[in-house]
Image (cartoon, rainbow, N blue to C red):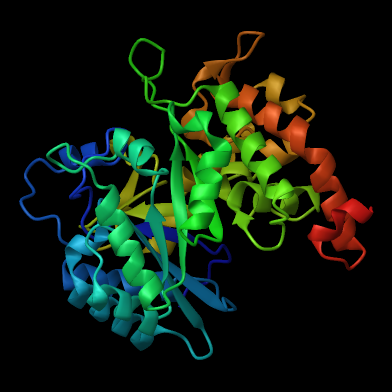
Length: 388
């Protein structure tokens, strides 16, 4: 059992970058090119067993809960039997009294009764990727042949609802849907989502620009502001949970960020490929960020390595002066390093592409979040912020 003190999380890619959709902005589809000789990207039972044991045993001795996060590609391509085996191994290796949880991100198109029953039986939290109503969702999320995926996603969601499976929604905010914050927010509520994640699409191109799918920084800020206003106007505080709002409220209240994007440092959420290769982060699956293979070195050893610790500390250490002197540093912390592709006004590299959007959102929302934090401090729910 590990003597290391730092807990860690892993995003597991049991089928690598293989997917049945052809989402135009997906950053992971190209990762299959890292393994040009590979014919099958299916994680073997040997790697699964090794990973499960190491992931659990490598955590600090007092760890009460371990969360397994399954992503892709499209993890449902592995089939139900693979995950039945995965869940049985978790039970086998769990320490006495330890709670094992599972999160599963999917495009939803392959879900059926068997999948939904499995998720229900093991209380898996399922994330459904959906970008909005049909005409918006289908613009950048077609299947491999270029046809609509919307109705297959909605059909999959119906199976989850039918079997009372816990789910949330993940919506990529891109150049099109960023113009319709209230429409997107109300649509997601209408389909039954009570926990919403919004992921900004930022696709750097060789010429220093970004793709036409990328969200404009100011429009991203306007989108968050629009969702925020509708959230307040609809009296959804305490009923609908938006990840960006939860993170901001935590930070305003003086708590650590529950999300690495706005934490001071990172490096505790690594990515595992189908063959056991471990990378520094889900967004840094490149050869230079490969830490090693869990069949050759233990996960906790790779996590505690100087390389990975430096990777995590660089998030704070490489912030430009412009960020360090910003009034919103305590709630932004420079955002995700993958998006730090701009130069600050004084010519220093490392400014987040979304900087202007973050400033717009924080300038608009922080007065309310401060009131909510005050309510919580006094023992009242955040929804009573109007009384402060």
